Length: 266
Length: 290
Image 1 (cartoon, each protein chain N blue to C red):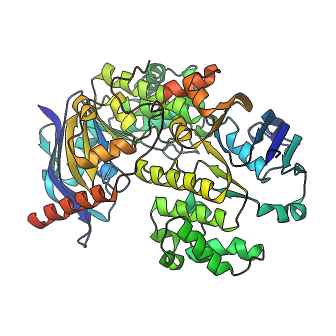
Image 2 (cartoon, rainbow over the protein chains, first blue to last red; image 1 turned 30 degrees about the horizontal axis):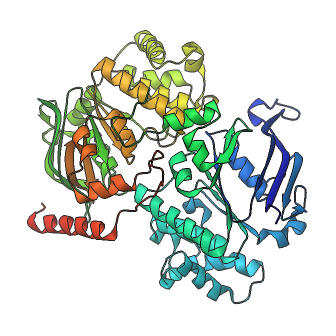
């Protein structure tokens, strides 16, 4: 079976507003510099890199919130690189996204039940309210949470609502962009364990963006390391940790402060 | 003798019985680096704010004392207290973007405090700012002093705030999660820089963080907090060898370690949370609050 995603030489250039002259167009700066890779079905791909490496931009291209300026993205064999909004709509329910900050990605005026069922209604799903309750249970939250507002939940619970909203549509692919970086270690562990379970139970494919290699190691089967818009490493997780090929990957690993006072941290 | 001593410090939400700090006792000696560790809501930032006298208006201290350099802060008038704290303490804040005024250049943001509060003349303050930017390894300090915050990277802005904290040679600095907004490679540079500055100036440091990895790199001692209560007070070496409290052990087990081949993460078990909550409740019953 073919890979779920195939990317060939994907490029993205955006106007650099910091260098925009008073009159006239801003010069363009290249964020993604020709990325080629694929994501297999059922795979959990980790995408890692420092700030400004282009990892979130790449993620947004995968779910076509951004349109690449060059190259090609194929999803399940279909070229989605330049599809317009109406052509994308039927595809949208097949690839979903979980956002970094649940406080700003969940409307504070809507109850949890509404938040999860809204996309279901939009896509004309059968019995959206029942499906929302089911999704809540799948992420380990009680049904009664459907009547609560986001501010009544803890950070970890809010992030579970984000996950419930993404899985409710029964997508094939989910993009998770730094979804545990705002959480305490304990809720972080809970959310990661949940995600791992869901991927296996629901046969999902997941791209997990993070700057934290410890988290990547816990969850992902393969890792893509980005540096300044280019792929510097694309290998099985075990290999990356055993023997990183790129100097940048080595530097990323060495920079992680382990909870161990004897770690050499030169 | 300790430079800072908290003795039984308790605080609550004004006019309610909602307790935020519960009989917190800890001390920081001159030149010591102490970590304050806990999950969100544990009260670690609250302690930093209480020491610096910047608690939100909705929070009141109901019992206990903060002794800074031999002086009990509660015994001073608000004005004297501000002066005492301002002369001997400083803060390295969490978010380098919101801590700097976006509409002003860097130079006055470092020198204003020296001029207005410590009464330095402007020339001396500007020379000091230039010297400090050199100390925090900023190339072209003259250009940076003339820049606006948005023209600088996150790591650069955090360096400026570190320089600014050390400007008036404080005896104690509270660092409130100073690297959580930064990526790992920049975090490493900034932590090393804070350590280097701290040793050079012999400053005591209270380092607020949720990351035990960071604690093991920069601190000598630590206090672990849960529900506004200190559950463990230890030196770093013995803590990481064998944490004394069940909650500390669970917190350490939940911290990710990339060197661990199976990489499994264990959330803090419900039973441990329940036990530490009971402990907090039991302590509450035996304490009378004013």
